[in-house]
Length: 531
Image (cartoon, rainbow, N blue to C red; front, top):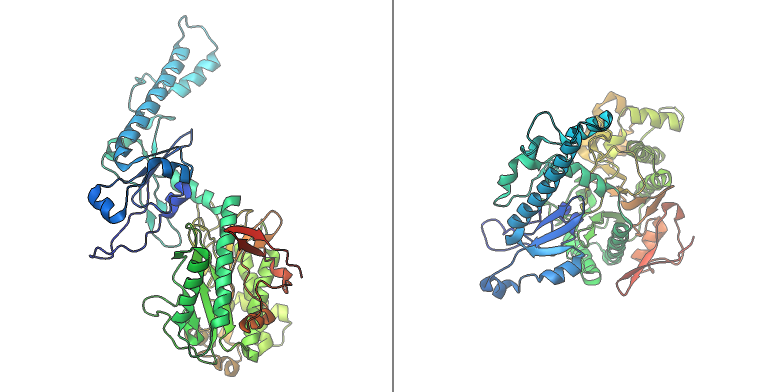
C-alpha cells in the first residue's frame, strides 16, 4: 500500500491550505484532487485499487458529497475504487489469496521432488527442491524467510535533494504483516521510473512550459521601474491560473531585481519579493507553474527599463552563450558534470571579454582551463547547472544508487545530479553569472584566483545582482528538445518588452532547439516557426 497526501491544517488552526498530492502517489495513481487516500497495486497482475475517504452528513454538508467510486474509477482509469474503511480487509484478503497460491505451488513442487515411486530426473528434482525450499522444513512455515513468498512493498527512501525520507504507509492493522514487509525495493524502483519520462508526461510538461513561458512574456511587457517585485509575482500567478488553470506554483516565485539576485533562492519568508524596482536593475525572475502535479522551472533575466546597458548586455550574452553551448552538446551519453564545466567556461570567457578577468598573457583556452582548475567558475556561478524535473521541481533520482557520486569540487558539488544523460530525461539548463560580495572577496583573497581578476573592474559590479537563464530540456535519441519558449536573444527580449508579438514569426535562435507550441481549445499544437 501507498499513502496519499494528507489534508493538513495550518499550525494549530482549522485553516486548510490548498491540497497538493504526494508525488509518488500521484505518479502511480494520478489522484491529484483527492486527499487522505491509500492505493494498492497487486503484483504481478498490476491491478490498481484506490481507497478514498467517505464522509458522514456533517462533513458532506461542509465539503460536499463523498467521492463516487465509479466516477473516480472512470476519471483515473483505475481497476477498482473502494472506501478507506475497506483497506484493511482488502489487504488481508489479497495477502491470504496470494499466500494460498504460493503454498499450493510449493506443495506441488515438493511432491514432484519426492515422487510416488522415487523415479524422475535427478536434476529436475534438485531444481524443484530449490524452488520448494525444502530442507526437511514444513512447507507451511512462515513465508517471511522463503523466496517467492507474498510481500507487502512499502515506500521508504531518502530524497537526495531535500535530505528527507519518504515514509511508509500506515493504517491500523498493517502491523499484522510485520514479517512480510519490504521497505527497500519499491523506492529505488519508482524513483528510477520517474527519471525517464513517458510521452504522456512530455506532453503535459510541454503544456506547463507553454503557459509559464507565456506568463513570463506578460510579466516582461508589464515590468517598469517603480513597481514592486511582488507585483511581478502576482502577474505571473494571475496569467498561469486564469489562462492555464494552474492553481499551484512549482515552487516559491523568485522575483529578484537588482542586488536581490545575489540571493539565489530569494523570495522566501525573510525576503518576500518586496523590493522597489530601480531604473538600473536587472530583473531575474525564476517562476514556474504546475499543472496536475507536473512542474515547469523557468528563469528569465532582463533590464527593467527595457534597455540593456553595455555591461548588462555583455553579462547577459555570456550566460546565453553558456546555455546555447550546453543545449548544443546535450545528448544521451554525456556527463552532466561535463555540461556544467561547458557553462562555466563560456561565462569565464565572457568575463574576460568584459575586462573583469584577464588571461595573464595566456591563450584564452589555456587561461580558462587554469581558471576552472582553480575553481574560479564557482565564484561567478555558485550553483549547479540544473536538475532533473518532473512531478517535483527538483525531481528524484539525482544521486540514485549506482549513479555517479556527488563531486567534492566547488561548483560541481552544487550539481543536483552527476548522472550521464539518458534518452527520456528532462533536465533544467540554467547557467548564471552573479556578483556576490562574499564570493568576490574570497576570489580576491585566493592567490590562485586573484591573479586572473582585475579588481578595480570587478568592484564596480558590487550590488549588480546577477543573470540566470533557465530552460526545461528533454533528452531525445540523438540530442535534446527545449520545451521552454521564452524570449532569449537580446533582440527578442527588447522586442517583447516593447509589446512585440510572441511567439515570434521567425526563430532568431534555432540553436536553442525550442519546440514551438501553442494551445487552442485546451489542446497543445505544434507551431511551424522557422529561422
